[in-house]
Length: 136
Image (cartoon, rainbow, N blue to C red):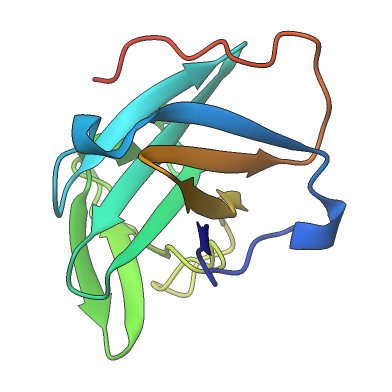
């Protein structure tokens, strides 16, 4: 098992549920994909430069559009980031901070790999434990 060291608004020990998102081969390298879990859209990134996986909300808080999975990956020093494809606002994939200095931030989630599957840590419990929908 490999767990990403990326920080999130909630501590990993507060993760109540690990959602089995999809097989790792289903995700593009150095790009994003969107997983729908219940009523949430979660952007997932396979960042090969660092060998890390990241997950965050898909909603860009700047204009309230579900686009971050289609965002541009990069880094600012050692900080992996995603830029909204429409507005170019950049967010840390480690802790969700807006790297442009604005007040809007995003929620990030811990990730781990077990076998050939990516799991996303969620801060809530649900009875619908494996509700992954299409990766886009």
